[in-house]
Length: 207
Image 1 (cartoon, rainbow, N blue to C red):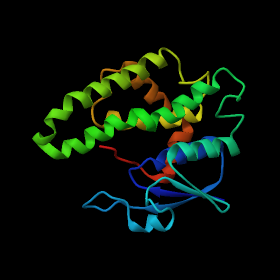
Image 2 (cartoon, rainbow, N blue to C red):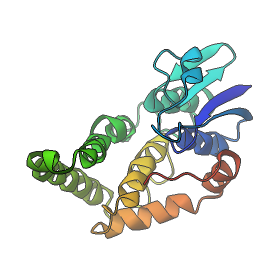
Image 3 (cartoon, one colour):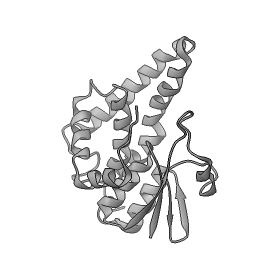
């Protein structure tokens, strides 16, 4: 049985969605952020030294980091369903979007979040951060074009990774100029597996 160590309002929601798409049985161990600091509880450090979520346990194997978890689960349980064949022309694109979401696109959003707490002291950084947000989301908008998915003609683990980034951007009002990404996000959120993941994990607020 797969156990998802699930922190409220966190990236672990995407893992619940993925497992629903894969049709895998799993259990959830819930954790709540501290109401004052918004940090994860120390009890998560007993699962993984970083004390972050998501973390999964699968028959004695513990995996942390969203991209690693998605890749592990897709390779083990959904190789023919949620990733292109490794000899396919789409495979490199799949790897790119799978890791681009956290490795590149999420960074300017996190910088915007943290510097927003600094008030006027962050003013010199804001133009660069805003420029990077426009750069990355413009890139995603252009790459998606009129297609329904980022890779190939069906959902892959890359879409599950990218969707969380778009949700984080939308919660901060940053997705408004990008009509294609807004439409894509709506399609992802309308998937039955996505809805089942929300039902099991609970609604989350990224604002």
